[in-house]
Picture (tube, rainbow, N blue to C red):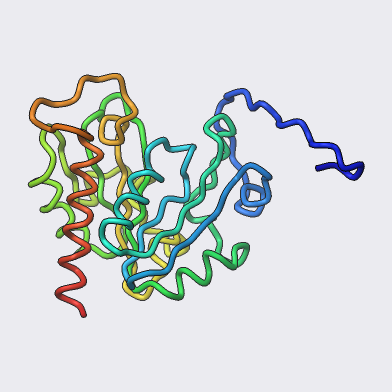
Length: 220
């Protein structure tokens, strides 16, 4: 509503090339939605929702099925404002700061696209034990993908090792999951035979739910 009480016309966003923004700028945009749910000490994150298609949906489905805590930021797909993970600062988000204080470990869902690496799932982040466990679950759940846990095989900009990256801020740090479009259901490529309803995203959710259950069983 404007000051005169008349409904404000909704802006139609035209897709543009992704541009860099600060965390404060992104959260201050009127069409960006930030939210959090506090459940178990295991947290699932997707703070590039909308920009990296399918990530928020996978994170939400995983948190719902596993009872994990959830933090998400969704922007309109046409906005395309990118904030580097190391710049996602809880000092500018009381919601994020409170959520990070609640969780013991985090799993952040990201998307990436590399023409020469269309079928590689990359597992970075500072909790290497959890990354290895998730890698084993993914290998048992999905077919036709190379699941990479060896940091030397992950491009440096996708390793998720910076201490300011929110996935590394919980007490036990976490795992940064980088999914190509084919693993997020955002490609026109036909699904792999035998995957059934939901395809790769559903199988990835299954693997995430399994590793969260395993982590909770071994830790608590």
